[in-house]
Image (cartoon, rainbow, N blue to C red; front, side):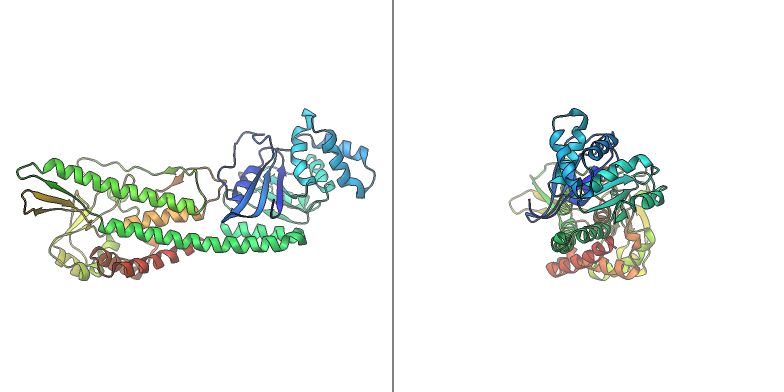
Length: 466
């Protein structure tokens, strides 16, 4: 197998599988809160574009360290023979069920793997750990220790002192919260353990940094395409002369909403795939719509802009869109389009003045009716004229991207998409976005404006890593 190999070892239920999942970026690694859930050693290669940069071996927990060390000490009297004694122990106890776990975890080490010893920083250090650390020292392989604070880091200082007597390098590393930079830092440390690994791991870090940049670029392009689609999408249906339009209107509105919601879900999945998440569950708070009120105001501003921010940007979009009809200012709920917006009436006055008369509106887009020369009419729904709607789509997409950037592959909790984000933008950024949205909606140099939008999104994607 190409690239350095690292065996992740330690007692049961100390986060070994979480370390493997994070550093291998593999959410297929089985993680269970029950002790001893890993029974067989399994190798997870870290690959980019088919190239294996390094591999991690998830191993069973150490169960009988004291007995193993007693056997080793009884069969070896000098330090030079210790690695050989470990190999002899594994060879002589392969079929012994008492030492099945120990043989499983020692085998990749005697085959040449480096050692990552994992402990839980929320549990106190004890002398009973010293037997397993001594066994690992007998292996004679490059090693480092990782303090994984599963619940807290209350005992991290104790572990630093104890581990420092057995391992040259000791690091605190939260497998569920370690940001990208921390993961690269740990890889760079591995390179210092063995000169033979240094070149490979330096290349691994460089490749991962380049891939991260491409992930951000591809994400920004996907998000910009999603927003452009939300701004320009329209559905139409021909209806015969004299046929009632009510059922067609309902069907068109439903098709419009379902299509854009499906487009948002598709964009999310594509971004998740870019970041190597294949089994991610999402948790989105579904906001209740009351017949009398249609929405809760505090909720439909959740992902877009606040009422004050919308008033501030209205003038930026107004010069491009112009007057004639009211402009809808909308939020979103229940996936994408369940939340319905507010309407600024008297568009010209509202836009130029920055504040208009606010009232509730049920639709995020308007119906249009056009006669057909052969008879009948064509009914269209969309595109959306809601000023807040593209901000909502952007806010939700950026929140999703930010959560992915701050997540590790060891985190198996739902991805909660119910926090606000866009209020962090300054006024100039909001106005610039409003102008871009209006130009894309109006079809003015759309490709150029879409590229400009993608560049703005890329800058925010970079910020998520900082």
